Image (cartoon, rainbow, N blue to C red; front, side, top):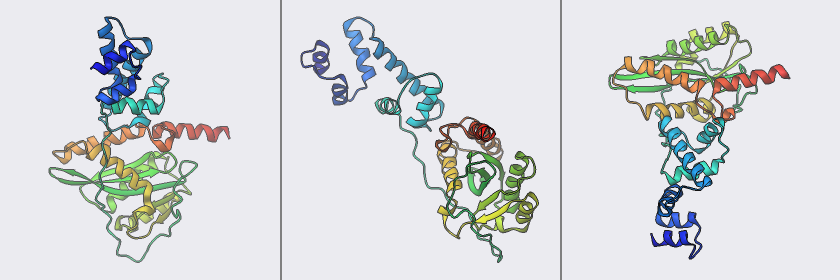
Length: 296
């Protein structure tokens, strides 16, 4: 504490940040202590920093510890704060706010036994400038105490919005078909020219899935067997599922899991900021893309 007293009295002119790091305390704590020691109030800059630190913690806890400094910075700016990402990262370090780390997911691909395979029309050129150019599909597990559920999803590459999904007890063509049918319905019933990229799992080589694509004017595309990188966009989505849903929530029953997964996907589409969407939620980013296309 003698270092703090010296810093307060100006005896050694030690910068506050250095003395705080040396003693392992936050600057906001130091300013509060210093103010109490002087019997006065915090200076305006210190007051702002203390309020900002409290808001950073509130946002971090409001999102269950899932957001790092880039997304919290975006939230703060939307709320009217003028703040840099470096400052937010520093405040998070001071308060020991560390976003949860993800874990590797277990893959659920079951190779199709038939001879038919779609060509790879994407060839790892994943982005799309407009919606309804490239869709990506795949499935992942949702564990419950009663046993596994399977989440099949369809994502638009341009907006990263989840257009369709099913939560099923079976990892099969019906689940994949259901997710595709929902996506087609969301987009108005006909989506000619869309590329639907998946792995070579049996659910995507099934005749029912092929027929649904043909009816909607969708061109099927498939990556190579066993190559997760050929479908990296949807694999990234599954990492998000692991990081922000499965790693946090434990489901006792399948009945409990189904509405929770649906609600979480709705939140992902409408509220969760995405780095690939200029830190906007996918649904809001779609509106921006539509406005740009209208203006062009």
